[in-house]
Length: 276
Image (cartoon, rainbow, N blue to C red; front, side, top):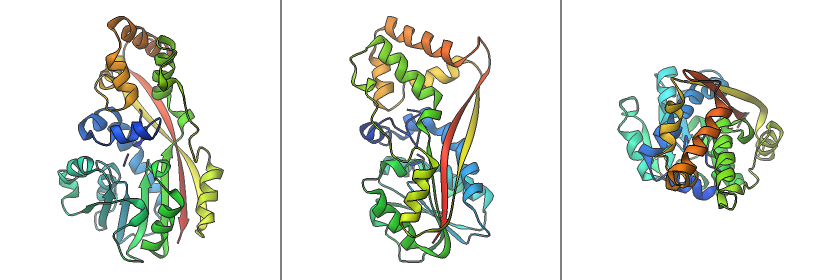
């Protein structure tokens, strides 16, 4: 589920209901978060890869960002992916780069593959949204051959400027809105990720913070996708009065840009890799 910047990924969702909403709207998700996921995917893949890979499973394939990067970097690798959202899978299946990928509907805690099926089992921007992350990691390890790679990446919430600026601006214009509450998010530092991998018996565990940069032609390039985004925060934005929506825009523009014209933003992702 490559997955406000939501989380698919985020940039993934600010909470579980936001994720559910985002993942039922493939076009809205791609317009809002897709370019962030696309930018992160090849960087994460290079971090995760160790040696040649004959086969790779993407758990939470979403609209296909990670597998498209894998198809470009690993053209001879057998690719597979699984996701609980048929809407996102349908969009991924239409990508020519994934014409030969094995894409299935299913959940991370019960992968429909036999043991030792893959050289690598990867997950991009959805680890924090699994119903039972330890069970999912046990499944990752089960389907990965001995010596194979188990790796994941997720957005670091404090390193996501767009979603933080949006939530702060919404809280300013509507202080009582439920989006002002920001529940604790799991795995928000490299140590927590490394601990989760080691707890499952994965070896040679390493972590890295990956920085992603995007350049926008102007503020409208960032703002317009927010107005049709599929998450609770972007839907809340769209329902505001014109005056309040204008205030949110002004606050975000002042915070994120230095004036008219092109500007760049960075986001940070946490990545972890271990050997089965």
